[in-house]
Structure formats: structure tokens, C-alpha cells
Image 1 (cartoon, rainbow, N blue to C red):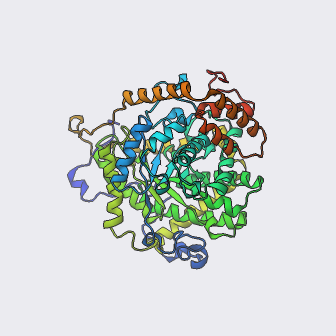
Image 2: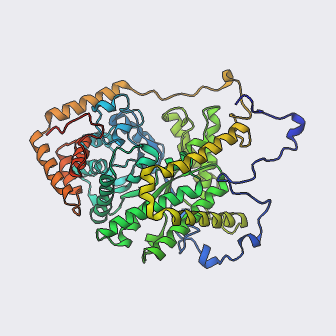
Length: 549
């Protein structure tokens, strides 16, 4: 990096021109776009009004005039009790919905006292080992009044939440929220090789979709799209196409079990990233709405317009941020958020300025919340649906991305599970990431504070860093130990045996049995182990533990 010219002579700056005349995804750009660049477009067929097929301009007629996007910051660290404090802090600062991501042991489907969990408990988020952890995390938070996004891929964790809500007196029919539940993303962005076998993963996802349709109708049981696709190198078209293929796979599995397309697909959402290329990102969301609507109506025969709407939660792209001069990230995040809102998204997490360094502090999350509030209340961006619609440039980009997304879907849709599990999608993403890094190192792509406009190390502003609390982790581990000692062991054994028998009946929905096991305080690792055994896999993904019953 030392060979990169960090600035140019003063006399050249006045006449400086941009070097990289293409979008972030690499599409070459003209100096101006005119009517001939969107020749052949039909307004009603290709664009239409917001709230009408093909929903290019938005999924609601009045968009943000009728309802603001959800302000949904990701939170979670150390333990369920500490996360409870952060949840209450964010709600007090004006957050309108919750979004919690657990630690890596939980995402691996193992308990905090598993040998492989050592060093990872509470580092990335709270551990969720049993229903008890959900009770602690949600203490004093009204289940029926908040919308909860659970950024986790495992159905038992969702059941812990539902069981805790029911115990607190909440009606399942009034619970609102979203479960990531995109189990095919395991080998893409989380764990490679995946710790949850594909057959188990698919069963859990499908059971959740069918259960929520009947018993938890306000909960979105599947949000396709680990936001990590984009962070791993996927370009704008790949991000949407890969996830639409995954959604298609899940829908097909649900239909094979007798589901109705207009009941199942209507409750599917997406979780995507938003980068800093404002116009490409806004066009990406417009194109995604059109492609999804077309797929649902033409391929799956959907009749309900709600089934055809692409509903998306967006996380501003962390890999656009820098550890150098981190205060500059506030500006980057604001531009990313603007792009997302111009693109008509339904829910937004603005990444914190310290994202490249640590988990967010209260101070950095307050700034992230204020970023969205200023955007919503001071800029006027909410006053008109699809304010970029009709721009020759934006409509051209929308058409280009529609074309690219559709092309990738046609190539991958029949083999998406195989490509995901074998790592072929990862290869495509990594290739993009390597090319981008080369552009940064050569100076072709300018990143302020990294390869231009740098400051001496001693001039870098120090920021407050979140420090994990070992005391909080120890308290959680003690709670787990005490739980194992005081629960009714025979009841746990019986409920797990009933669950195993249910899993072995391949078309039976297992969630009622997981619910009973959760209420007996069976742990995540125990429930996951029973699923694994019922499908012929070892109890423990890592081979360290034997079935305790």
C-alpha cells in the first residue's frame, strides 16, 4: 500500500477527473443517459405505480407517507441480561423494532458449555441455549408490542422465543417479527463446511414456514439472504439472484408438502446489504421488486398481490467502512442509508461507525439511530414514493440489473442447493472481492483514508471500543449449569424422545414437539442433536459429545 500515491499535486487537483467510470458492480457508464437508453420500455408493464404490479416503484401506493421504514438496529453482546439492557436503551432512543444476532456457538447449534464454544460465548452476540435465555433477554419488554428480528438460522431458537412469549401471556397470533432461517446460507457465509446437515436444515426451515402460516400469522418465518453474501464479494445482481434462487428452493419444498403459494410466499422477506454506490443500490431494489413479482406471478401462479411484493430489511454494508479514520464512516453510512430509502426498503439497520473494529457501543449505536432519524425527519426523502423513478439513468440501471438478475437465476435456479453446499457460489463471490481489493491497492478505486487522504497513525482519532464482559459470560454459564441441575430430567428425556419420533415422520411438523421440549428446558444443543440423530447423523456435529439421555 505504501506504493500508492496518497494525493496529487495541488495544481492538478483543480482539474481532477474520476478514474473509475463504472458502477460498483462494474457496469460501464456513459456521460449522460437519454430516452434512447430506455427505448422499448412500457410504463405500465415495466414501471407502473407504486403499490401495483410489477411494484418497481414500491410495494405500497404511498410508501413512506403511509408508514416509515422500521428503524431496526442489530444489537446483542455478552449475555441475555446485558442484551436486555441494550434493547431497552435502543427503544428509549427511538428504535421502532428489534434485531438481535446471537453468538457463534448458538449459530453453530451448540450450547455455551460445549468444548468448542470456549472463547466464543457472548463475543458476537448473546448466547441462546434455552427458553430461559429468552425469558431473561425479554424481561420487561412487551412481546406483543415489539417486532423482533432474530438473525439466526436455527428453528429451535425461534421456538424458545415463542415459548417464552406464550409463558409471559402473549398470544402467538399477535407476535410480530422475522426469523432469518435461511439454512442454505450456512455454507455460503457462516460455516464451511456447514455444521447443520442439509436435510436437517431444510426440514427446519419448511416446518417453520408451515407452522407460522397456521399459528403465528404475523411472524415472517423466513428472511432469505444472509447479508454476508455482499460482504463476501457478491455484486448487486448476484446478491439478489442467489437469494431469489434460495427462496425458490424453500417455496418448492413447502409446496411439495401441500402448502399454498399465496399463503407461503406472502410471508417471505429478504435481508440484503446496501453499499455506497447510491444509484446502483437504489436501482437494485427497484429491479428486485420487478423480478420477484414476475417470478411469483408467472412461474408460481400467485394470485394475491401481497405474494408478489419483495419485502426487504437492509443492513448498510460493513465492508465499505474503514478502520482508518473511523469517524468518516458516519458519512459513508448516511449515504448508504439514503440509497436504501431511495430504493424503497421496508426496514433498515444503519451499521455503527465502529463496525470494522468492534461490536457497537451505546454511543456509536445512538449515532446510527440518529442517522436514520435525520434521514426520516429532516431530508424530505419520505415525502414522495420512488423519487428517482423516471430518471433515464436510474431506469437504465434498473433494466440492466433486472436483465443480469434474471440471467443468473436462469443459470442457477435448478441447482442452487448443490452450488451453495459445494462452495461454487463462494468462488464467484471471492473472485469479485479479490478484484475489488486489487483496484484499491492500485489506486484505481479510491477509499478515503485508506489509499488517499491518509493521516499519520498518531493523528488517528481514538474511539471508544466495546470490551466483552467475562463476568456477564460467567453469570450465563452458571445459569446454564444451574438449569441442567434443577430441571426435570425425566421430562426433558421424554419430550426429546417424542421429538425424535416426530422428526422420523418426514411430513410431520416438528415445531409442536420442539415447543414441548423447550418448555421442559431442553437446550439448543440437545434439540439439534435429536434432529441430527433422527436423520442418521451423529448427535454432536463435532464428535465431542454423546447423547446425554
